[in-house]
Amino acid sequence: MRTAGINLEHTKKINRLLILRLLCSGNGFSRAELARRTGLAKMTVSNITSELIAAGLIEPLAAERQGAGRPPVRLGLTRRSPAEVGLFLRRDSCTGICATMDMEILSQVEFSLGPGETANTLLDKTESAIRYLVQHCEDREVFGVGIAAMGPLDYTRGELMTPPNFYNIRHVAMAETLRERLGIPVFLANDMDVSASVEKLYGKCVDLRNFVYVGLTNGVGAGLLLNNSLFLGNHGFAGELGHMTIDSDGPLCTCGNRGCLETYVSVPRIMQRFRRELGREFEDFGGLCGFCEKDPAGAALLDTLLEKLSTALINLCNLTDPEAIVIGHSGALLTDSQLESIERRVNQGILAKGLSKIQVMHSAFGTQASLYGAAALPLKQIFDGNLCYERFFEKTPSCPSKRKRRGQDPEPDPDLQDLAEPDELEEQEAQQEEQEAI
Ligand SMILES: [Zn+2]
Image (cartoon, rainbow, N blue to C red; front, side):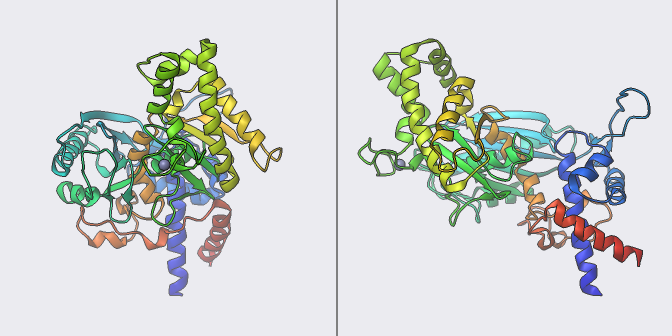
């Protein structure tokens, strides 16, 4: 009997998070729509939404009349629902936002980084930025902080390891130190990984099970979302697309190999080629992309570089078999026609050509996917079962982390380690209702 009780509670937690996840998308679903999308029984959805309303997390949105009859009541987050803080750490600056759980920005901040920076100045500046954001969140509770940064990172320890060209700052335990100073759970993740995650949670890939996010920056990186989960690899280093060899006799790369992708298509390398070969200087990558729309010589040069990128993407597609490729960071500034040329090459070059078309699309967040991804990181930890947040649900029994003081290491919620898919839940739901009937 005891085992059955635990299973039911497990199912209940998963169901609640499935509903909350949809409501956090900002789409204002009705109860009937929530039931259809999750595959849960209408009564279950009704019970869960009543709980969330009672907890002050969601509320009925203003009704919109559409023709005759009463329109369905749509539900959305309240102004009392908690907020999250996200920071995107780059080599020369850091941008931060405080956002609602449906990604409405409440406040933002930016600070610069430069020569003379140390681990301590970095931590002090980051702490001040977070404190500012926490104080400017419309009196909501901030339940977590996400930091997106360039690699390499130690995911388990939340440590910035040995980022190249970063003022010799090495091995900084960002997450733990800031968690101790602020008393809020802090998570550190790779900027490409959080970008892929936020496309899955809020962006263009909500309904996709397999896609890759590719970001053009000072290098080239990828976040791999495979079989509905982020793929990190053994050390969290998966997705180092920039160091895929395109030509073993090519230019020397910072990694010591020759002809890596990013020796051709990192943003500084592209700008350098235009300067050297066409004598053209641009203020930013967007200017260069726009110029190439009008200038045949520019278009031809950019096309040779995008061909290299397409070659790498064909290799990546042959390895991962995705439904789509999302291009972001500065790559979001490529024009529609430039993206179409990549899409055409990729679909002509992959082994599975003709089976289905791989879409190549701009990020839903333009050049800012890492910033939004950082802000969504604490919520993702809840959905993944790595952060227990029992106050979401007023009547929820104690979670394992409840015994711990806030600010200490958040413990994973063992009941939520593997969120089941809606079709699996339907079966569990039926069993649950059967039990309740008894
Ligand atoms: Zn390399």
